[in-house]
View (cartoon, rainbow, N blue to C red):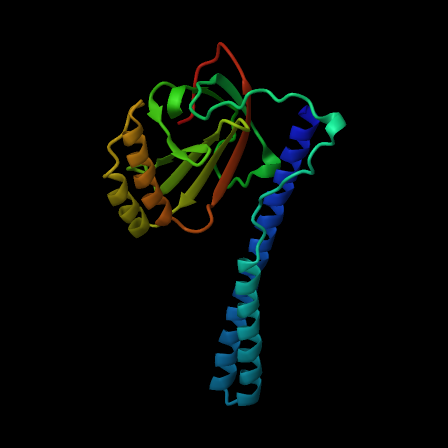
Length: 241
């Protein structure tokens, strides 16, 4: 069972890297296509009409190709072949996503991360009941995972903190925004009323809806992605969230 989980984790890591590489290729193609079209404009201004048409055609094809590559990017979903009957062993009961897990020691995973300037110091988290992080910050359900979006008043950065109880992974994605973008996000953030931990499902559902609105206002790709892998811990001060 442990070997299968390790293989699945490795497959997920590889799928994430492949997906990010494909999106990077699509972005590069889009830039090259735009450059070719710009070059066509310069050639046309110099009365080199035939070369300008070729540049426009090539640029257009490359940009269309970029869109196709982006639309056909891998989903990142992975799976392993089912175990043979001889290898099947009784599975432990599935842990509910609302079950408290207690203190966790979370270590930075560099091969799955993209860091620009943030600290990558290991964290100690305390995952309580129903998305209560460190006994004070309420996270909202996002499928089987839990999210909290931070919109600081004095910084030009929006952070999405995500915890997955099933895999014990903690991921921070950061977006570096301009003044106008931050102002727009802060207006949405001002509607969020849930601050402390809450056992009320309706309040958590409302928080999830408000955070979804913030997420739609963010760019498609974050500037940073910091991944941590967590294991049970005890006797340490909490941090993060």
